[in-house]
Image 1 (cartoon, rainbow, N blue to C red):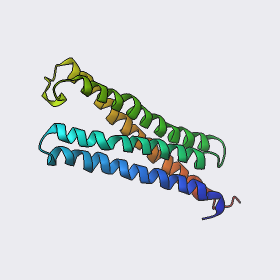
Image 2: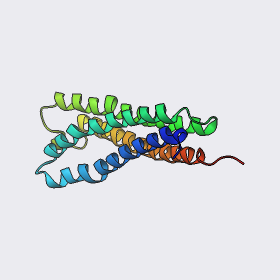
Image 3: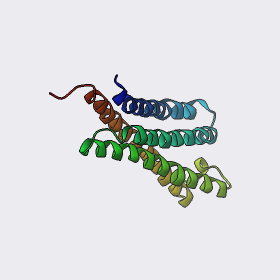
Length: 164
């Protein structure tokens, strides 16, 4: 690895670490909490306590990728990398500052746990929409991170090959 591609490869690795963490959280931790804990309220509390870390670290990873990988090369490849890395930041911010915070405010207003509300209750419907927004934002951020990793990796490899 040459010095010129080191920042790009570090950016790809930072995003890959966050992506792995997010996949682990989404596929293992959250479902396991709802299976292992005695009720949905406890599982929801555990997921709510850990999800902000996933979103905050996603914002940080995306910003690092923009900083380290956003200046190498030129043209469409750089624009695509920057859009993907920036999209990770935006999606994670949307998940944290819109969905999670509104879910927290909704829960604070309710006397009963969300799980006890009827499926047609307006508060339950609002929760379901916000939960879908949170899941969707994380899912899109993960896809954008994957795309950014591939683009960053390709940029790093391309800088090691001299044009002929």
